[in-house]
Amino acid sequence: MEATQAFQQSVIDSVPDPIVVIGNDYRIKLVNRAARDFSSAANDASKPKFCYQVSHLRETPCTGTEHPCPLEQVRESGQPVKVVHEHHHANGERRIVEVMAAPLWGADGTFQGIIEAVRDVTERVCAEEALQQYAERLRALSTQLAEVAEAERQRLARELHDQVGQRLTALGINLNIIRSQMPEETEEAIRSRLDDSLSLVEQTAERIRNVMVNLRPPVLDDYGLVAALHWYAEQFASRTGIAVAVEGTEPVLRLAMSIESALFFIAQEALTNVAKHAQATNVTITVRVQGQALRLVIGDDGIGFNPGTMTKSGGGHGWGLLTMTERAEAAGGHCRIESVPGQGTQVIVEVAQ
Image (tube, helix red, strand yellow):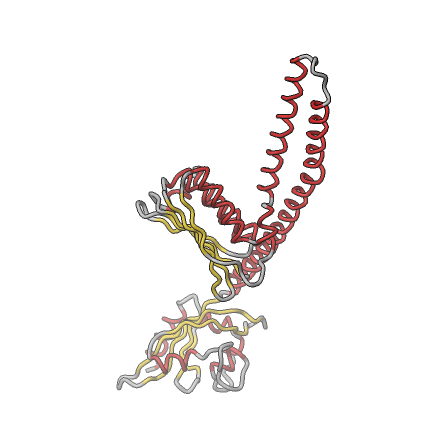
């Protein structure tokens, strides 16, 4: 008997991870060398030890979600379980461990307890938490940058309107006055040069208006996202010949300025991709409020593609997909592309209201 116990002890001592055998009464029956090194309480043989005393310095069995009891879980299910616990290390530190517990059955088939394999995952969990915190900071920074960029676009649009646009209008008026007051005998070369100047003023004013629209469409400010999508869809359809239907109504609560802009420009980028790549005849843009989220879907009946292949290719289409994804994430949402060759494409964006 002693030889058998010595052999069992030798076997589990060879395992580098802590191994603990626990009876169905929570008493620790056997531990290996790694477990004794891990927990100073496991080395004290002066009195019987219960698992909750050694692992958690408790006087009662573990309960609840903070310290779920693997013994009880295995007893109920009869199957191995994995739980994450906080254990007390021999040096006094609180360590995060992953516990794999498997049932022990007696010769008569009765439940005798569990055998636990314990792995210290403190560094991994801490690294995951640090990465999560870093990702949250990045999301917050992206949102802040999006808001700053949107405010700057609005400022530039106002400056172009108030400073450049008004001056161009005044310049055009002055040139028209000069032209109307020119004597009939004025040389044709001078009249031609004046007409050319008036044409340049008009062309420049038109380009300034286009830049202002691209920075922040006035209809988006005045009427909201759905109205702006209707306006742009009409322009896109007249320019490309591709029919675009916009479905949905404005949210009851107006979206934040940065979110509206992000969704509008995502739709704009998606339509640009349709014109360049999809060979589509129809596009549907849908805006729906679902609970606390807003869902924007741009779907076409084009040739479709394999999203995984396109995003890895580094081509122009891939850049468009990346731009839409980054805009959605900067607005605190997410964007995904669903497409099958020959079955069209859907760009789906969801953001919190």
